[in-house]
Length: 632
Image 1 (cartoon, rainbow, N blue to C red):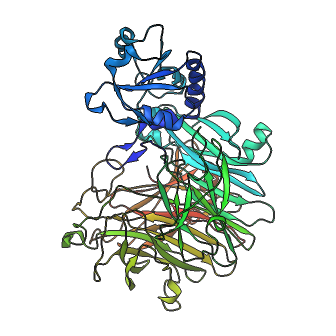
Image 2 (image 1 turned 30 degrees about the vertical axis):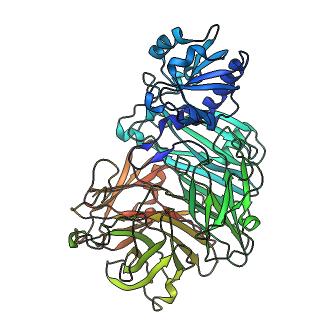
Image 3 (image 1 turned 180 degrees about the horizontal axis):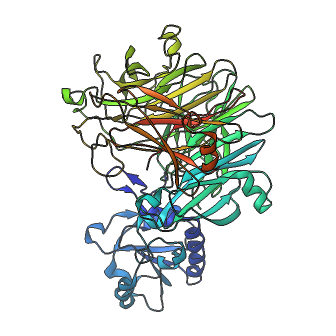
């Protein structure tokens, strides 16, 4: 596992990871290493504890004589395999150069020069800084907003195209100008193209289309990854997006997947084993300039604790399509797969190939920092049903829906869960206690087995929630996979997400969660793209409520054009614990949709409650896509 710190629940994303992992930083550090190697062994001064991450992400350093620390408590600790020495010993180092593993080192350099070994040169990580033109805040290099970055699976090959869709949501936080710095890597990890793209001045739509990129740069077909760096960001240091994947010609494939989560994790889960007649391909995409060694990543059946390692290395920034049956032969749905990624990549995508169609979805971060919370089983009545995971039920006249709880923390040995089923008007029509499921369970509930024919003909939703009647533990990190299947075409789409406490005035820890301040989160701001090329955009909006809240939502659908200018608005009222299937073309006229343009979008806004939503596209060939929406 890479010795890096990427993200934790209290501190958020680790900016030093982002600063060292940026592709341009990787190139600069490689040049710095070559220069230092001319002087012989190097000593590393590590005042801030960055050396381990530096050497993990960029291991091809010159021979290291020693690592020197300033904090006396760190003397004798092991950093990147070296026993840390006191900085006062630096003058005696047998090193031809000293590297200060720090940024913004003006004062530090003054202190170090009298301590340099005789004839030794001094270098710092300031030599690996991005150019000021690429920084949001040039005055403070390790400002998180300087590294608003992310990766995306990007594909223009084998009849499949991808389109990254988002909005300049930073404008809502006061950003004056946003530029995207973009680099496309091919499957071997070789840069194919590097360019910049201006975002609209206001909160306008942004699209990056793989076919347009290929034509613009005269590229061959590619399947790789796109690195996105937003310059000028405000409010958010993460690039959020939806990624559409669609077929051309006779290929009827259509799917959508959420953003990649910008910080690598130890493990990922929520990956289904293949059903009969399916292939499941995990896209292993190296997010770093260091190769993934052979044996460093592995697959395991969830709960088996018998990982099967990938026996080959993955080159820097490379992409490999791993058929899960190579490492886990014979494993079949509804078994689940855990990916032990060793912090080598951001959240991966998996692809399911079935009957000539392909669908792509994302795995989720499996957390290693969570422990059982004894407060959850004893939440007071004011919290109602507590943690809820709302999932859509698309109209059952056309769609079949399957739900599978997924362990999503290494400490989860059991899942005590129940399904509460609601119609669109918020009436509970069924519930099903699934038991205290073991970690290795293979339970997938088909709603056809739970509901009578005709129930939820126009759709509804299910809340997955805790139920401790048979005991069990909880940590609040409850997840599920929801799978919808078109009964006629056989097309399938799936999504996965985690639970929250919804729409109560009372709070518990950081719930009900808010994106823009302390809990309770009682408002909604969701992004819904528009349809194009014969595909209709839709959103399954759900008004989940842990306890009683407003009887109806006061939800505004705000249509914006590609520059972020409002075009029109419409209002809907969703019953508490109810849902609503939104098609923009049913709420706005053809002229209004045309005025919004191909880069327009709908902002789902509600100041009275927090809605949860899923979005996608539908076409006239029985194809559709679905994943959870993002907010800002």
